[in-house]
Image 1 (cartoon, rainbow, N blue to C red):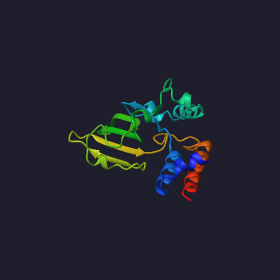
Image 2: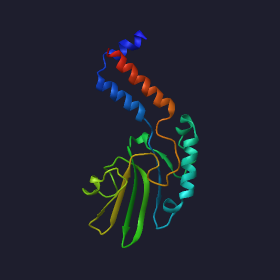
Image 3: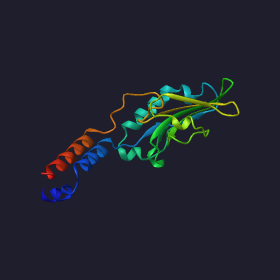
Length: 177
């Protein structure tokens, strides 16, 4: 216990809290990833297929989840350091030209619009017209599979992660005294 005490003793309370929450909230963001170029395509309408793939992904071990293969809809976003899931649509005169479910950095979209860059990750839609008359709409969110059908998926941090976080916090606080 003495070695842990020395390691944690130099940490401030704020650093202890930060460490606790970073471990507790640590997770890989997983989004639905697909595209359509017409209204009613699978990316827009195949909720059953998306749910099946999301549930199959969540049932895998962490090591199995690291392998990105054999899925039509599941996309791990941590490889590209993306922190959001997105749905982006591009329409002109009522016709869908593009429907995209993907990972996002929250700043780069099909159209470079100052209005779209103000989009918040609250699962609300923000739209803007281009100079060519296209309507581009963007919806951002920050939890796994939030850009599509939501299954009963376990929380971001399993019980072992939560317990580990709690132990870290206790060790931090004990070492302060």
